[in-house]
Length: 153
Ligand code: FES
Image 1: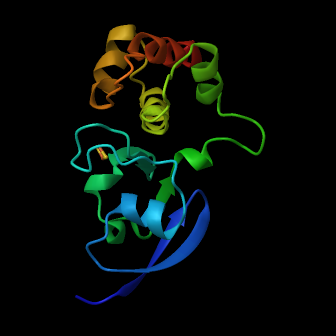
Image 2: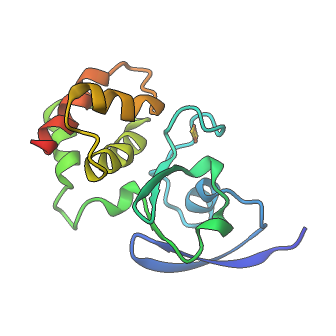
């Protein structure tokens, strides 16, 4: 299996990597581009720790081939803050204790950003349903919902 060149636009910057065609977007981000914010929990689409946005839609980057993300806008947790200024949802996570160990937080944030953008944050129940694919072993769920709801209001 050959190595091929891929061009990925991540957080507004076009990057070039050499990788096998089967490399996942998650491994491309973490291992080739040193963007280790996206986490590998299960590597099987079941925990949401690897969630990123591709053309504004959330995806599990462990289930996405990097080649398929070429030509699209990839946004990772590293792209949320503007310099020193946190994204409003990052600030709300701090205010509401939306994390404990922090491992799931990047995925929670990216899913939460999509939740807000796609209009699924109108009620606590809507948020819980949208966020159900993002697991938190510390059980910070009520705080995560509160943070997303605050940004919505
Ligand atoms: Fe992708 Fe768990 S690492 S869903």
